[in-house]
Amino acid sequence: MLDFILCALTNLFRIFLIDRCVSIFLETGVNKKKRYIICGCFYIINTVLFWEFRTVWMNMICNLIGISAIVCLYTKSVKINLFVTGTIYLINCGCDVAATSFFIHYQDGESNNQIYAVISFFLIFIGALVIEKIITIHKDAETVQNVSLILMPICSIIVITLLIYSGTCTNIGLAIVSIGLLITNFLMLYLYNLLLHSMLRQYETERLKTQFQVYANQLRVILKGEEKIKALRHDMKHHLNELMLLANKHDTAEIQEYIEQMKLFLQNPDEMVASGNLEIDSVLNYILRKAEKN
Image (cartoon, rainbow, N blue to C red; front, side, top):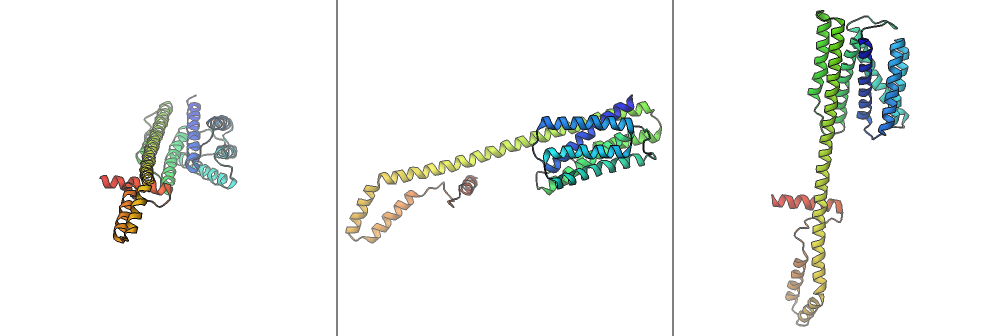
């Protein structure tokens, strides 16, 4: 019974990690309802087939189809699907082989202790975190601080290995410890995801706030310029009369000085950049104004 519980839990958490890996690779929003349905079907079918038959080829086909079905939710490209499915399956397969071959000589169809599946899950967990780190750095995004997160599954593997080789714990004890470590790792990953999403939402809020301030500043600049133009237009008749009087006197120097004064009046001290591109002007005027204040 404990073996079945371990099998069900490890498979559940493993499929959760597979879905996480797919989202790391592709990072596009998908319908949550469809995602839960496909992941749920994959979990039930995979768990039943493994528990009943324990054959490598059946497990391999089921995993490939299941992973590919999850990837299909994120992309319709066949090439991307094959690449992501193959990569994730090879990581899973490698972790399974490493976990079993280190402790036992595995034979196809043979019933083995599910504690080795727990070790395999921890290895997949580490692999998923490493992939996330590599892809995040490659995309020049915010660095994901998951180095300390990797220590948890590593420590879990060490604990289980020591218990297996020391012989101080019975199979039931090992199973209970493994279930506890599985749940602890899963909860830690879940809390990490919540924290990460919270930080991303906070970053988005700050970005939108800054964007609002940029456009509000540019709007003030434009409105101030419009006020000066309106004032000039209102007094245009007076200015033309003054220029006409000066022209009749042939006083070129006075005319030039009067025009310079008009130009100075039209200048907007808040408009430091006027390239004609609204986005560039908005950002530069906001930053330069802020720099001038500082």
